[in-house]
Image (cartoon, rainbow, N blue to C red; front, side):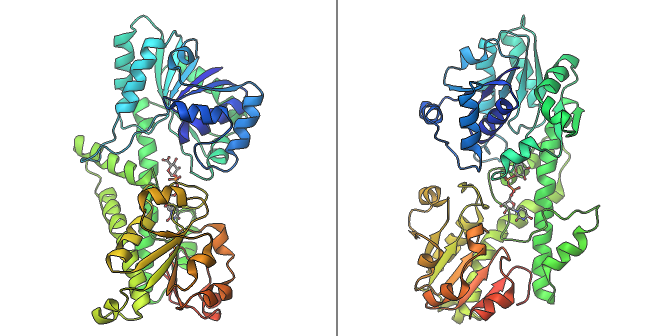
Length: 443
Ligand code: UGA
């Protein structure tokens, strides 16, 4: 198969590299010449475990190439995937489809057919119809089918997710298009990954419903964690206790500082907008969005309370001028992505309360500097903790799971540790001399 990937960002690059690894002939296109130049030189624009090697192998085998020339990449392709960004539109939360429609128009000019045009970008229900309308209008004579094929990749685990998916969703009623998609995913099909064929609108909705459900699961356990703290219960045991019920499932029940990233926040908002547009409001998702938004700042206040050692206003006032070391800035481990990271709101809350913040993150500091220039970035956890009054674990990077707690404590001038990811057993932190608090567990 000859596959063209429009957009060499996170989704396009990972998908393109994996398709080429299946043996297909793949060309990844991007408008950003510096990105294409870097990729040609073997430099990855994002941090994703295993990607550099996967790209290098398939480039060397001659199956994977990069270009800025969309026209020549699209001509003769069997399948053209649209994998451009669909950010939240400023002001209203609708998905901004400018890049999708711009790409569609360019594809329409260049496509020779027969071909399938596949939306891999997360696009609201009905977008496939609009993409099809543009293609038909510009090139009525060419045989092009429009297919929805959402991605379910997690940052940091994207290659594994692509090659061993829980399912592949393909939205089209057209038999020829189904055949092309079957051929593209054949290696996974042989591996017995389930392929679900649906209508196009259903496929588009599956993507949003999946992300909204996962966001709901996280938010549910986060609220249960707050209740655990109030009643003296343990949220990790609650997660285990409910997760062992197969109908609920164990995953995505880790309580924390709230979900972030480039997907859940934007996709939940976009789904709400679709619900509004079609007068089928999604009240549960609405509550999830609100609860998650307010949770991030609430986590900042939790740190201030731990630092004050008391809930009264006078004690809180005394935290002014104190220093807090934040460990972990990215929205989750194994990524350098800072988009909608809880750390941003937490740090803002601390700074608003007159607290000095310094920070460390294994991969995210370059991106963090662009969002939060006024922070003292340190070389490692111990350096960040040196002389600090409190340390806060915001992202559960492996390196923070194996800290020498005694050494960390000795480096500090204070003794407060707030573990927003429940990385440590409370007894271990206390044995090292910390006044320790975490999420949904009473120390
Ligand atoms: C998410 C989905 O998991 C993917 O299936 C989907 O393809 C992707 O969005 C997307 O739409 O592109 P991702 O945003 O990379 O993937 O990250 P997740 O691993 O899902 O984590 C999202 C957020 O939830 C993180 O902030 C994480 O810390 C938080 N989380 C996750 C929890 O707080 N608790 C959990 O139990 C799980």
